[in-house]
Image (tube, rainbow, N blue to C red; front, side):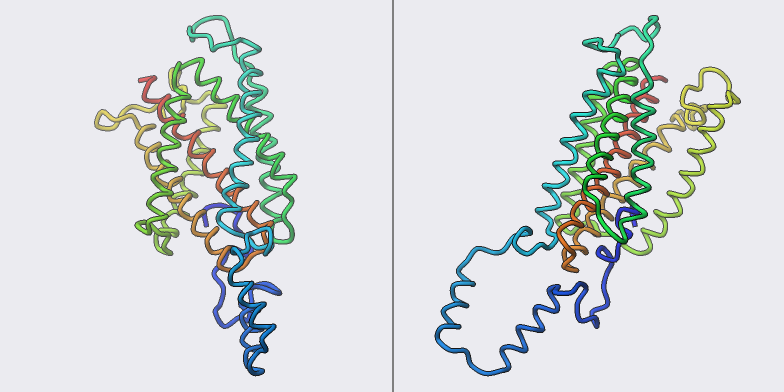
Length: 308
């Protein structure tokens, strides 16, 4: 799966031989209806009641207390609204109250790294808590706080890169929206779907990328790499004229796009399973994790290209 946000059985494909995924789920409701029909013909009053039910508008997620795609979309929008608000705070905090980024990267101005650090650490800790407790319960309040920390991180890192590469944030934002939009359109049209083989390759690539990222981080912290390699191993000498960071970055963006496909697929599976409505928060959380990852990678790709 794309991330541990979907490690609850609510998002897994169920055995069709099971009577119901959840007590009172759609399979159980269908069985009860079939049993009632076998007792004989209904009287006129029952027929009138049924006609009224069929004439009524379809029940939504609130009425059924079941997870739906539409409800998950609204929850996702709410989380990103929180993220944008705290991202603005992180931006201003990073720049020390400066109205606009300093356009001269060689000036004495130094961005405040605290919002970036606080957001990253706070978001990581909360993400671990949310992921490992999601099998038992869903706590929307923790997910709200996670979105706030992610906003600080995104705002802080965006302001930092904007100081060094003016205009890079707008470029990364537009590219992220484009990737998410294209991925969603292809998934909705049925032209791209998750498969077991592709998911295995994705997981292997993810492990390899995590190991590479940790190694790169250690080398940067220990100053082992020569000066001028601001992005560590990603700043290595070009291969056939193409920066190594760009090659790896493109592969990571493809991985993030496939991760979105997995997120969409597992949300659909949760809806088919008749999962409780509260699990829509986990779907929204999973999408936020993937989109933030995608944005940061695109931000770094553009920065690497512009630094060469």
